[in-house]
Length: 408
Image (cartoon, rainbow, N blue to C red; front, side, top):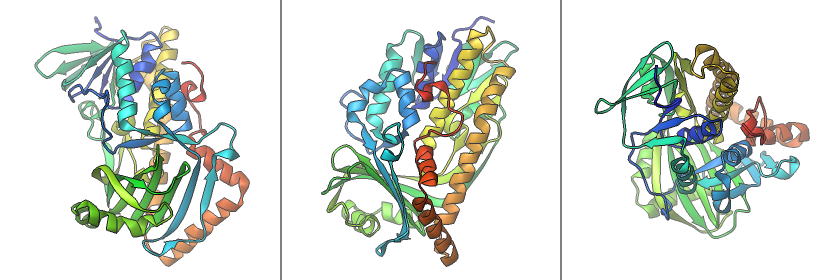
């Protein structure tokens, strides 16, 4: 079989180009196929989207060479404060407080706006001669042969590769065509997402406030701005999201509190339904899944993109090592190593976020007492607190080389 590319990545969001850049450093020829048209991000206006990149995800961005293009626009996360309570009554006196000074590696993570991260990834991928970006292109079929996979594109053109990687989100067509099924359920919650300007500085502190309808995350951006990810019961969220900005802010203020002074909205508002999605397998013959195509979790811990980037770093390492040994990067034995590495971690994250959401998104008095006492206990024990800080920074578990600051 003659190959047009070594690896074909379906999905050109964030994970797809990141994987392409990692694989190009291992000497592989990569195609990134994206159904969306090419977008120009030069001087793009802020559109309200931003991500909490864990320390290990920042290391990955350094390893694929794009962090220098992002660093000046990133906001370090220096502390995390976790509280429990009700809107308008303030938080419980029992809380968790994580400070980056308790670990040696530096800030736990960085807040990065989508326009800066996406622009850096796409700019680097477009400039890399080993990467072919195919925008406004849909994959309509895939056919597996003993030595490779053929993708059929809209219009009838075909593309042949040793391996196809599905980075095409929760409704992954790659997974569906490969016969990979998934378990999924809705939480009956909707995330309301917006950015606020506030009067007082945030000092790089992220806040997570658990309320009965769902959690409210306040995540620091550059300047006196914060990203809000606010979960509500879906019917209530729809009513809130339909309000004009001034009334929307009136609903947000008692939940947000007054600790950052006066608030105003900046940029567009978003909403999206919350649920869990977990593929039965992360691999099939000549196919690997990563990111939301393999696992979609509740944003309660802000780990969705970070989990996807761990997939990126692990798959890149497995493929690079296989190629160095003279192995076919798309054969079952190679893909089994990736599955073994990432499957348990992703299933554990899905279970943890699901359990946390069920434990905290209720007003049961016994549950409230248990979680408040649990947070107070964690906060009072330096060793346990440090473990949680390292978890938030992504420093636990079997880290791929790119996430340990090592070359691929």
